[in-house]
Amino acid sequence: MAITTATFLEKKKRGEKITVLTAYDYLTAKIVDSAGVDAILVGDSLGMVALGYSSTIPVTMEEMIHHTKAVVRGRKNAMVIFDMPFLSYQTGVKDAILNAGRALKETGCDAVKIEGGVTQKEVIRALVDSGIPVMGHIGLQPQSVNVYGGYKLRGKGEEREKIIEDAKAVEEAGAFAVVLEKIPQSLSKEITESLSIPTIGIGAGKYCDGQVLVFHDMVGLFEEFKPKFVKRYAELGKLAREAVKQYIEEVKSGKFPGREHSY
Ligand code: KIV
Image 1: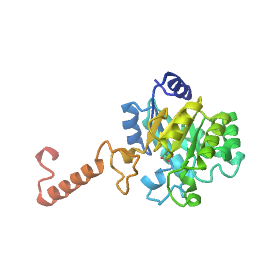
Image 2: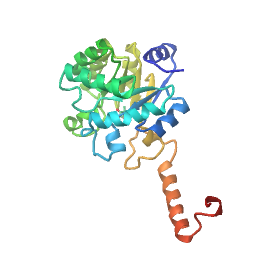
Image 3: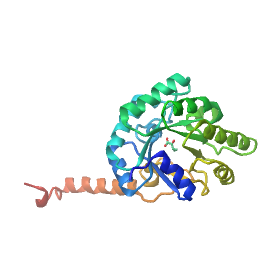
Image 4: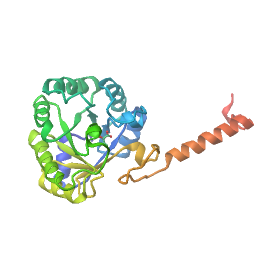
């Protein structure tokens, strides 16, 4: 059954956990969709994981649209969420509506995600009023890495109250869910209990209404670094490298192709 924003809210009411994974291409979308994930996030982590950039900052609308179209072709039931790239919404309400509207019209995605709480309240409200479902994203906001000076834990000390204010702002603006990234578990618990929209955690502990991970992290394909919050459910990078080594050996030794692979 197709997952919608209403499903997210119903799941929160029923106390049923929501599962989200990233995908940037047709094949990955098919795998995570057929496994039964609730939503596929075409994250701007695309920049680092699939395009080799050093942060999410360089990612463009064109790149996001190209990859989201492929993801939409690969899903049957999961909701597809388009991550709005840096500077596609921070420049004002009009740009945000035009870019998010373009994402929906050109890719067939179901919703967009934007980073920011209090600062993006007006933008989130304008998008929702224009018929564009929005997932918020607070706590660590990777598009602000240059302001933070790194990817450190957020929400400690005085920043705790600020993140609670961000959560309230995102809900009041009409978002259907909010990502909580890299904040203490006690803070995500407080936010989750105080909001009526679901919280989707990444590095935010077990009390969130759902969880999101980068697919390439959780299957061990992205090997450059592993944040503490990532659990590797498989080691596909190692497996693929072994397979490639064996292929090279067999081609060199003449073992491949065998009779069964020949006409
Ligand atoms: O870009 C992304 O993959 C994300 C998730 C980590 C939430 O924003």
